Image (cartoon, rainbow, N blue to C red; front, side):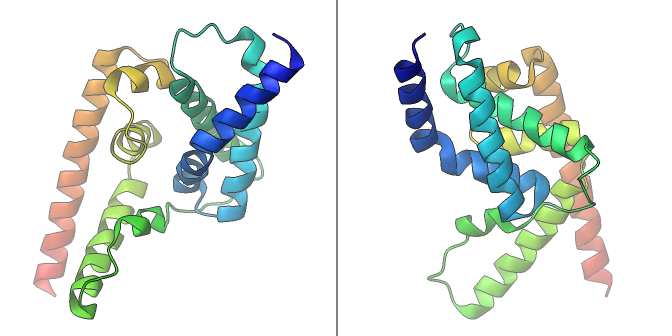
Length: 176
């Protein structure tokens, strides 16, 4: 693959998936600057790997797989400090609500974020990729290099774990 073709594919991928990759990285590191750095690392690795890309997976799946691996590497690195998933989900909140409804929704959002960040990494991966990155089960299977039945099982278990955590949070809030 010639240099111009690689550059064109890189630019196309950055334009198409850049914001998604930054948001995905942000769910892991909860720091926008770090997320942007990790997204940049993702695209560098994508560019370097382009000659070996066989097209077995879609470009979207391939880039998301690289991003997840970059985030895992960062989280396992000496640079990583204990951080939590943040308000990436804030963009899904609407602003045309009454202040009271917004506060209730924000409170529910914070409970959900805490529940997601409390999940083990293998379960957090499937929740984020399925519900927020909107990857299909097949794409998740390819991105995580797992059999599709393992992805389905992890997604089911992650939802169960979230349900238990959210129920417990509701019971704690209800007893105060």
